[in-house]
Image (cartoon, rainbow, N blue to C red):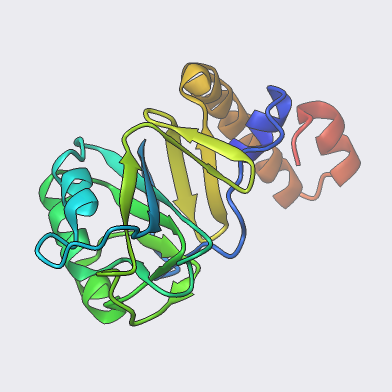
Length: 204
């Protein structure tokens, strides 16, 4: 529904790649985007290997959905998220994490019930391979810009990004659309033709 509304409002590119899937098909997440970018480590400091990630975690705002873009140079070579990062995020009131990359500690995250979406799983530690080089601003995933404060909604059908300046409009349209779809469903169950229902409610 949210995707349909954004189409109607003229925002055609708003869904993250379909290979970003929830670890549990029942996971649903909604909250405000907190972008994070992970890049290849250039000057590795063994005494402080998670410098950028720790800073990013400690600045997560309440009700955030962490949206992670991982540089292609490390995407398949480092887990972008895991059990301890999920624990830290939950403690700060985050709603979930969307990673355009791979994650690990899958069983532990599932037991925690923290909604995490990713492209799959790798056991690689990010230590020495990657680190956060930017956070709290914006990331671009497959041409879609995700800014801090954008609304993020994700479930088994995919992840939708609602630009912050359109949140109020989308909510208003969503309420209207829910009413129309409920009425349309009721009439379809009563046997009314699909064409008549479409002509009346203009939803399908």
